[in-house]
Image (tube, rainbow, N blue to C red; front, side):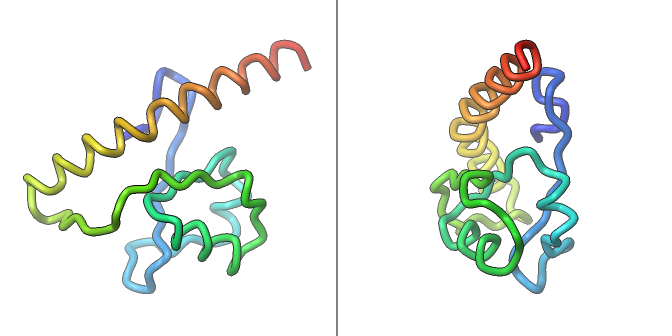
Amino acid sequence: MFDNWKGRWETKSAGVSPSACHLIEQKDVDWADIILVMAPYQKEYVTNHLKCSPDKIRSLGIEDKYNSQDPTELAELKKELLKKAAPILDMVGACNTLSSSFG
């Protein structure tokens, strides 16, 4: 959904549940400039199980209640993600652009 967001971001998806298609690993954390999670417990999982600064992770405060197999719920989730993640990606992207321009 956010891959190549405004030409700035590459994205990967990983989960914290053992049933996730891809369980987050240290190499995912090392690869990422920023990690967005839906819920606070997901941030806690990453910081407790992997080497990751809490400052690198942003919790979007979205309840993990959506059924990704239900098109209506999936559309609602995408709307929430866009509303909450887009401003963070724009802000961090602007800071990274300034940092690389002046640093």
